[in-house]
Length: 264
Image (tube, rainbow, N blue to C red; front, side, top):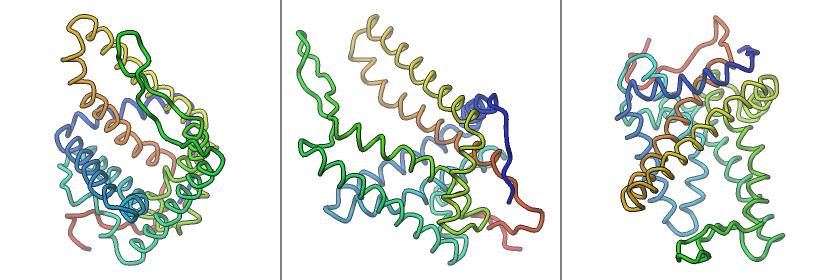
């Protein structure tokens, strides 16, 4: 496995590829993302253990969307089974993915506990009545911002780690290290990548503001949530290309079979 150094403009190409690939299989990719979100809501509703299980399975879910994107990029239809690709690539890699998930959960729980200790008023986001018209406003507590700032570096660390474990057989700890190195060495491309998606989100927000001014809040409010989820799905789709272009497999490096592929 070798690290590729790409120019900053590649970040914009990742955004374009994410959008183009999404529209190759829009129903499949959107459906898979909504299935993932539904599973998160159901598991998260289970007291105590539910949120922990969600965090442990997060790296595996990230990989599932990457595998689905690879299918779509190849012109293939990704079935729901791709979401559990991490557990269909052999016991060793499935165990490594679970270890990565446990590390992820421990980090997030630790950050939440630290933020709760430092900010007793809470680390949530709340809707409050604050405008003359009675429209709700979002109140972001300082603890939430603190926790988010601490989580951001770890999100970067875990961005490529699941794919490195699955496709390259890297150990969980090494995968985190290589993910960080890839981000640092291709920092310019990732900055452009993030700026591109931020621009897309702002553009969508402006579009709904105009729609709200024309037709009112009923229609625009109904459409805003699904439109936002579709944009997030495209962002998740584009993550596969950030991994594909950042790492290159060695010629003699074995790869796990994709779900549905015949065994050699």
